Length: 156
Image (tube, rainbow, N blue to C red; front, top):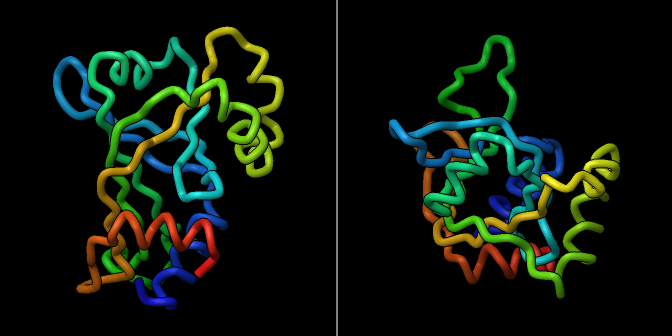
């Protein structure tokens, strides 16, 4: 992975705390806005309510996508917006990894702390299978999972 891409990706994920989660519903694709945080290895963490529609969808089909996109700016083409498209399988965070996952999530979303006491909320990890980086119009590439995880764990 190019260092310039890694820098832009870390900047994008550092500036945005929510993305659009795509799941498969009864009648086809559905999307919803969800807060996210990255763990130390670049795995997106999602704190989801069991009563939410996306959670019901994930219980039936754990495959999902997460889109993280730069906000629009007046006078700029939306086609030139840097964005990240992550695809994988959503799984509950294991008991062994829960304390570290919760800490990583709350570092990005401190106001979510009380929700960890709600019985219907659970921390999930999007186990990545594909990563697409669109740096702008005409600049799209699939990133290797090895490079992705290395970028987050080493900062390079």
